[in-house]
Image (cartoon, rainbow, N blue to C red; front, side, top):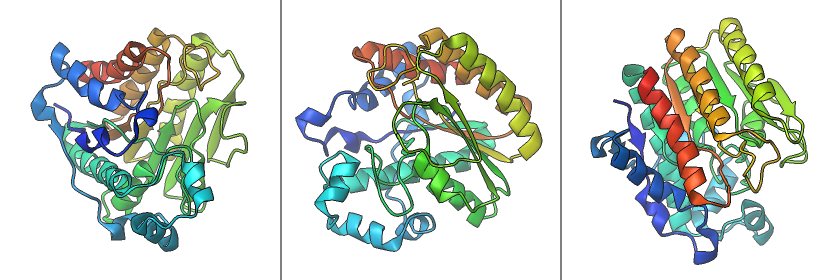
Amino acid sequence: MFPIAFHPIYKHPLPEGHRFPMIKYELLPQQLIHEGTASITNFFEPDICNLETVLAVHNSSYVDQLVQLTLEPRAVRKIGFPLSAALVERELRIAQGTILGCQQSFETKVSFNIAGGTHHAYSDRGEAFCLLNDQAIAAQFLLDHKLAKKILIIDLDVHQGNGTAEIFKQNNQVFTFSTHGKTNYPFKKEQSDLDIEFLDGTTDEQFLKTIATVVPKLIEEQKPDFIFYLAGVDILKTDKLGKLSCSIEGCKKRDEIVFHYCNQYEIPVQVSMGGGYSPEIKTIIDAHANTYRIAKNIF
């Protein structure tokens, strides 16, 4: 059964006005256990990531200001959360959870981070609720420890993985692939190795046809020995921050396509949650839970 990183510390660092839809991080594990998709033994609470590991990806000055809580007010505003020691600790735990999940994926084929997907964190700054880029940190960890030679990052959130693209723009061992809404944040896009932009109102048919065509082609061309998957559910028509029009079933099929090819080509995969901002929390939980349900069926 696949391991799932869980971060109970998320119950504490944010003031009341910032907690919805962040409550999903508390409710999703409960739902997965309740329905039998996962058991309590699947979950683990990671320790704090070693700063040396973080510094392999992030600028030392930026990391120091985060840890010392000395970021300028303007930089804090770009992040969108009030800066606190608890919030920084949470980000370090998320990064470590993704790393530990990666290590387990070599045995279990797939692992999950119940949080993560902080793809807007650049090497030298944070933005859009992302302080440290968990999948970028973990990808560099795999490379530095000779656990992988070529990595494919599949980012299917409605927002471009701009921070991830910037971090790996000069790294030929990591191929960054992002699909996203053309008019969605970030309004100034970075250049991933492959970007596919969807127009407002894109529905399941076009979205899924693109994913089903591109994912196996990239695996054949890049021949990765590890895949990171950012499974944001903000592609839904109901999402408050997204501009696409995919259904819950379409989002579920998207996950099935990605997992099918990871399994077919026998490539271990680590999955981080990413965004989801529908008005009703039950919609968000169901869409995220589908990712775990599909994984259980395939792997």
